[in-house]
Amino acid sequence: AKPSTGRKPYYKATLSSIEDRELPVVAVVGQPNVGKSTIFNRLTRSRRAIIDATPGMTRDRLYGTIHRDMGSFRLVDTGGIEERSDLIAEMIKGQTHHAILEAEVIVFMVDGRAGLTVPDEEIGQALRMQSKPVILFLNKMEGRSPEQIDPEFYKFGFDILVTGSAAHGEGMENLMIAVENKLEGKWRDPKKAVASPPIRLAIIGRPNAGKSSIVNKMLNEERVMVSDIAGTTRDPIDSYLNYNKQTFCLVDTAGIRKRGKIKGSQESLSVLMATRQVENADVIALLVDASDPEAAQDAAIAGIANKAYKPIIVVVNKWDLVEDKETNTAKKFEERIRRRLKFLETAPFVFVSALTGQRVTRVLDLAVELHERASQRVTTGVLNRFVEDIAKNHRVPRAKGRHFKVFYMTQVEVSPPTFVAVVNTNQPLHFTQERFLVNRIREAFELDGVPIKLVIKPRS
Ligand code: GDP
Ligand code: GDP
Image (cartoon, rainbow, N blue to C red):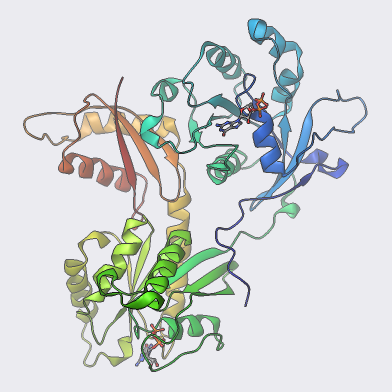
């Protein structure tokens, strides 16, 4: 078995070669000291400057090639604009100008902690005149939450805003996804596309629910020990499988126990492992035993997944053991479980038998669907129209007689989709008001089954 590598790598990168010249270009621009070289070095995994060797090209643009699911692109570091005093003039005549002309997509980097500065505004203005897709990247945001984003950045007029830290490697995958989306239709060499990275599917559930059995059925071979003795498979084991052109990494997390009942270090270790596996997973399959649907542990186990904001598929296993099934037996089961596990909300249900294999691949289909939904990115432009629509066509709930108004919204992260809403009040919104917003977002962007994070920020 392959060793667990923790989080999946967000890119493969090499130094650009001559053959890469046909690849689309993504330029990183921004005023000095915002971290352009740092992000370039991190993303291209180089510690030194790479000089483009193409004859006739000015020598101080640096290129690195990044390989992603959909294809490859070249990242260019402009080397920076040196004179703060005459920024725009520098840009127009300098490397930055060339890079911008050449680029399909621009990553506009700013110091997120410093807030929006005058030079940022000048560069922003110049970029807007180019009518090229621009991703605003707020760097140096390590350890900061979306609440701490300067609201001025939302109003800055760029569609996509991503936060992170080049020095600490935070937000890099989000940035790559944003770039990938903006490059859509511009890949010049689809042959270079590599297979999409595996979807990490964690199988959780109480002992004996059938985790090892379903993993085995999916793999169609015996890779982990199936045992009649509860809790014998203790360590999470990763196994890989290909299904329908998609690779999955199945993580069998045998042995999660309700935290309150943990005895001894072996058990606490297994909870810790399971929690970590859940955090690293893309999608969770929560196994419920159809022959014991009231098991108290289910709620505690599902709670781990819920807290991590992961999409959950409720897999009712051992469906073969349920006798005298009628047309709505499944529906009644589902209602019963939903009543008990209220936070499941829109999570899909599937009734399977790990023993016979019935509907087991349906779990994989659902995992692909949920993963895609959780990874989608809604542009600020679309969100602004959404905000207008709410104001016009919905009755926004009042709480304690107070009314709230959303000024604008931005999606700052994917998986989980995280939205920042800038509102007219610095009072915390009432539960029903937050819920109202989350439900509208879920409806509008088809995020059924995907947990949504909402950050409310007063306009300062
Ligand atoms: P450039 O002039 O835009 O290429 O900026 P550099 O990459 O040379 O970075 C300027 C300074 O910011 C250096 O001291 C970096 O170590 C620092 N820096 C870059 N990225 C980050 C970050 O994410 N967080 C923090 N705290 N510092 C960073
Ligand atoms: P784990 O502890 O969650 O990994 O559960 P196992 O995969 O070890 O399964 C526990 C027991 O349930 C074993 O005896 C399995 O044969 C049995 N089992 C698992 N799935 C099914 C199923 O779909 N139908 C039936 N009838 N038995 C199952």
